[in-house]
Length: 146
Image (cartoon, one colour):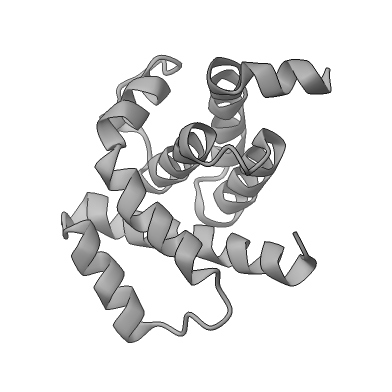
């Protein structure tokens, strides 16, 4: 994947994280959030198809994603910062549904989002959970690398 495509996909993740936050907090339907973003944002510099996959796919699978995430939490999902939960859900979705994206890319992109948008030490929390999820969901990929 070229640098521009990589940046476009990073921007798609960022916009999806913001849209999923809106879906969680305001409880707008994923389709409404997607349509609002299409109408109100410049999507020319993002991977629009990837944004669509994330903004519609994560809510569709959120129960499965939440169960996988919850297995590694020492607190309830409700206690997690909504931004960090959005980041974790996107990453978990990518681990499960986007096997074309290497797990290290998923983790690194998520850490960068958490550093930018999460709480002060949120990126450490996100990293810890994703390291455990990667072992659960991408063990064969991890074994090939190690």
